[in-house]
Amino acid sequence: MTVWDDLVGQEKVSAVLDAAARDADALVTAAAAGQPPPEASKMTHAWLFTGPPGAGRNQTARAFAAALQCVSPDRALGGTPGCGFCDGCHTALLGTHADVTTVAAVGAEILVKDMRDTVRKSFTAPANGRWQIILVEDAERLNEKSANAVLKAVEEPAPRTVWLLCAPSIEDVLPTIRSRCRHLNLVTPSVEAVADLLVRRDGVEPEVAASAARATQGHVDRARRLATDPAARERRAAVLKLPLRLDEVGACLKAAQELVDAAAEDAKQLAEEMDGKESEELKAALGAVQGGRLPRGTAGVMKDLEDMQKRRRTRTQRDSLDIALGDLTGFYRDVLALQLGSRVALANTDAEDALDRLARGSSPESTLRRIEAIGACRDALDRNVAPLLAVEAMTMALRAG
Image 1 (cartoon, one colour):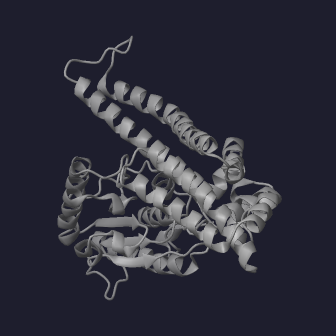
Image 2 (cartoon, rainbow, N blue to C red):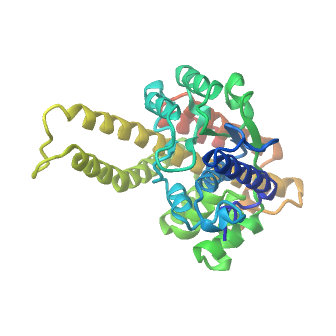
Image 3 (cartoon, rainbow, N blue to C red):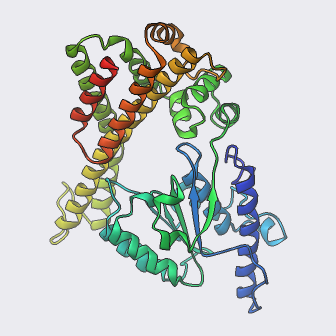
């Protein structure tokens, strides 16, 4: 087992990163021995990982970070960096390595204040690891100021610093940043490959794994959650029943409210799991006394954490809504496939009766308009339109479509 084994359907990308990790290891080894660096190294200081949702951009970047920090004895004897088991690999994969800093959007944008400390850290030597690694999971959410801060760091990096940027497409990243990165584009893994991963790594029953992989069309993270979380399966089942309920205005408004409420409840559950733990850990780090009282002058730090958690809850709610909208898009895609007599495999085989009914009761043109209405809702949410207003407009369009 290596860090590359769970990168589903990304064999070409894994091969490129494996070669770069080998050369990176040679660079560090040569420097430690006072020798000149190897010629024609495949390693570079900045990488850009792009690919469709579910392709595993962040997971791929983290696997590369682990390979760069690998301290396995086998590596020193000529083995492949990225054993997956040594302290360097293990902590990098878990996100606890001191020299792997992860930046993720907690709101609609990554603000410059969220990047300042990270950019400063990028100019320092690694504390314990072999490289100082900065992993930006949502590079497309860098705003103008935070992107310019990253650009300065990428233009003149420290000798042992590596930037790993992840975004849906190369166009989502500032041209001046992407021109300084080595670009790797990931592909959507096959349904069969995702199902195999769920069985092999997560111990999911083959039938459940196949159903989850098919329903999410190769989206690894969503497939895992759907296969392992009964509540996620219940929410998806409710979404797939929605198209048959939109027969009058009142039903459309009720369905919209239910979608938004379900997303809010999902965000609340995730927040309860994370916020309490984060708050307690920060209080302990600040030296809170018994009863939770904080030392003088530290209230502002707690306020910053609470603000971050609030922004993250808002984003989590929108992400949950986006999953529901993705399920709806897949549903109408299946309807269109039936209407056109396409041989494309249906994603929602557990809702064939509903698919059949809508396919026979509407035209391909109306189905396309409904798919466009879902896309318009997603665009509205990206523009920070109030979720309920955006979803109500969509459900009304689905009825009228």
